Image (tube, rainbow, N blue to C red; front, side):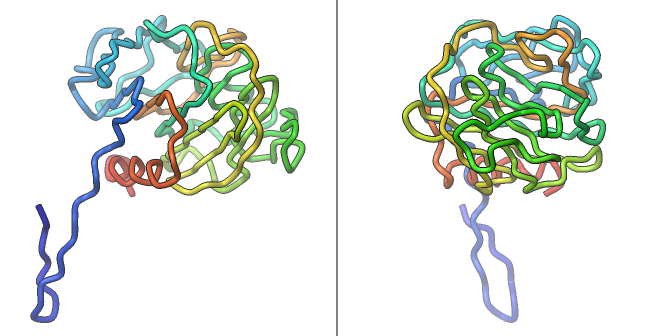
Length: 245
């Protein structure tokens, strides 16, 4: 259905944003939706229909439409998934609680220490093997997609404690890994075919219990395929109004 605005004596039609992409959707948490989280308890329902429940080990603070992770011990684990596919995509809506620093050393999520989707350590000490530049720039967030092959945000966005951002990492073994911020492509690299099995955690590194995430999380998705640029932009447009865009 079109919506019409009367402008200078004529009608201009505009279409509402398309819904999020559902093809290949393996996990979907949308904390603005009460069907995902009703506001109490430590269990988050997977809206994809694949029954990949997020169960908090230490419950993050609930704020009505998002969770606020304390960076100390808040995290959860995802059930019914023990590996990620050779091609895939992980997406977030996040808002940090602090400025990125080289000593922050936080993680958004991951399935093992070689496959971490969101390394918050301000770059510098994280390599980007086979990529240009050869190290992750300061002020960026990276994804370790197989033995330190890091695709990253490349300073395309100022990640601060005052603004939400849509962050997406995609990969295809034998192809490229890519990073998108707010629907726009910013960097690519070559992922490595390292082991992609383990226990998927959100809010903490799966391989290092000292690396917790401190910040807000409003939305999380995993697809079992590499989304296109158009699909990533579609998801951004479908959800951005919930985060001030």
